[in-house]
Length: 631
Image (cartoon, one colour):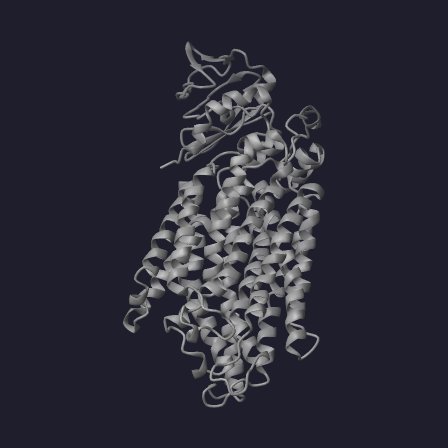
């Protein structure tokens, strides 16, 4: 297929297209000849790269060119064009979107508008609640042990038995895993919007119920807490695939990565807020109800009012979720689901016309024509096109969460081991909550939150692949740097250095795979399977989190039987546990090479929804371009 204009010919599908410009003084009716491309196909051209601007060829009679010199509107009369600049197009599918609907093209090239930020806040507040609810439990487990499992005469304060501690810490992850699979599948069957409200209300109800118990007996309290935290996790699990899918399908092509990462970055604020709320609540109770240290008065160190502290902290997570419920219900269904899955192009155009505030023509005939590529998740066709991609997203998320959640949930144990938090017997119950929450708040403020927003800023500049590979690399380096000279870090004069190194592992987890493993699955799979595949990837991650939560609980115990926590068998120690986590991070770096780069590409281009069987051989020849990382 040749591209001709005033004697210049360029091979369209495969050549690097040169800049072709019609000078200002050329008559507007100079013809542009396109051999082999009919008028309908020409009118569907969209998203062409032009120098440092974007040419959007809207399929009516207008061409919009946005550049540093302002916005220029040029008239297109059939195949007659006044100016055309085409530069550095990597492949035919980037230049020609013959089968793409106008409404999807409009979303891909839309300017960043107010509705983008509204969607980030609405979806992000769900993640704020998710992170708050999942991580705040680690702040109060020591308090629960003191209140409900006190052993009179023991020189150490009461602590949760191993099986109870594992259940309290891990049951929400079990619920999250189930919720990710179920709601991910349901989001593709019923639609993103219909399921979105269900998950939020489940989170609100169970967050409140987690702070309510039906008895003062330890068994009843723990059973109630675990029951509601399982269903809380179930709701949280649904938020992962739905929020990511909704944001990816609303976003434009240029800043899609930043928008999805910004939704996920609200998790950092959730962790930070959890620490701050625990600090404020514990400080208020500590000043109101003074108590001696455990070593001075075992019973008196835990005041009766301490039972309210953990309940208030857990129940607070329902407030931000409840505030956004109304706005979630007002969001229209995404155009990609309505048009590509529900096959209702008219409704998609109507919904997005309101959102984008432009007139969009419904193209129901295109939806009727496009019946190819309806293969299912368990088909050979899916395995051929996306099997390695799904393996890449599931394996990297699984390996990341083993390290990430074991570090997050057991910060207090690591800080205690190096002496950053005083021994439990030197504090009263509420004071211990304050010390633990203060340490988590500092780590979140100095490393967790900045790491998330570094990703938001850079993800569309250097790409998903580069950030994920870099993050896993530095996590591996810092983990080994902590583990190998571990005895050096435990010395009093070196403890601040340990905390700094530990914080850096969090920084590169969040400016790295913790964000990108969430973003990429929402971009590379077909619309009809996007939520399901994201849910599978996320559930794989939560399986890793369960291993981290349960495994690290036992593994980090001291090898000396006399120094283990009450009720635990000897483990491999913190040093060896950190070495294991370093190896896990290295494996994550290796599996990152299975994940394609989606930066700057449309969702349809990444998922190859517009391709027929005949085009696959050409795509296979050019598949290596997906691995290219822009520098």
